Length: 433
Image (cartoon, rainbow, N blue to C red; front, side, top):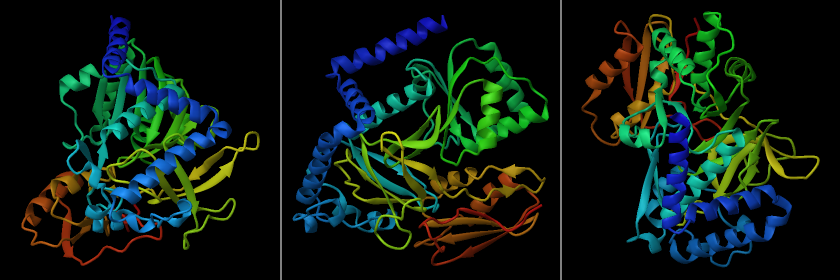
């Protein structure tokens, strides 16, 4: 029965794509050709880049200043702050009355960040997802275990989740009782499954399995992809031991999509050159970082014409390297900052991604930061341009997560200082038990 449903979902997906012009299929073929033939696809990639730059300089007030450009290097490096401040100048006038999709992320700063994507960009992202999922061992139609913080903003209706064969697992639920039931359910389910989730969530699962002396499990997991956080070698090895399948890390963000991903036999990140131009720039200057040095990851999104994102500083750090065999540039490592986890007053660790839920609950807050001073004492920093009238509710919700006996102080600030990478910590732990 499970295999039949998988097949039906697979056929249905491609049937609906076919009657809509096989757009996703065409994108998928293009992605595969470019990424599988990097040295021979330079002309095609340059064509896509020129199309984007010409479009931006003709239809965006922000980019029209660069209409006489000679290369990508003539364009400025931008970040979230610039996009927020210049948003109405950056977006393409051509898409003012066209259908577009708003995508939002809290970002590491804890401040909401939104852009528009056009329909073709959404289709490209779907094709990117299919391509990189298959590289990891996942096939369209299989069950997907999606482990993340399922804030209301992201949560899918039950019918949609069923049609997509997706199981929404919330990292905030990963206590012992929940994990015991989950493992039993996975072992009873004979269908092929893929894991996609936060590295910290996988870490919690592995610690539970270690603590309870589990042997390798028979769950029929065919792929495991860690997202959003750095995947440590210890967690990678434990996941491969317990679930008996290679575990890889994916580098992506909400505003763009899949930028790079590890392969089963390579710890470096294979860059998605079909959809992005990736640069690694010096920490202080907008020049290429020295060979082997850590730099700022800056991307040019080749497919978002609604909100052109040219030389966008992601706020993440990485090292660019070349494969000695075929000279394909890869990200040797991604030094993305891992947020400090806070400890509940009962001694348990509070998953740092819990903090991001507050960003969507309190959109009137510009920046938000939670600081743990000792076991029971916490400080919440708030930066807002309007009078914040829901302080009591914020404290109450935080106490429910961190502990009802917590001592919480709220401080209003004009700015929460950024790290050198351009990010701001949404949680800071000054207490080490």
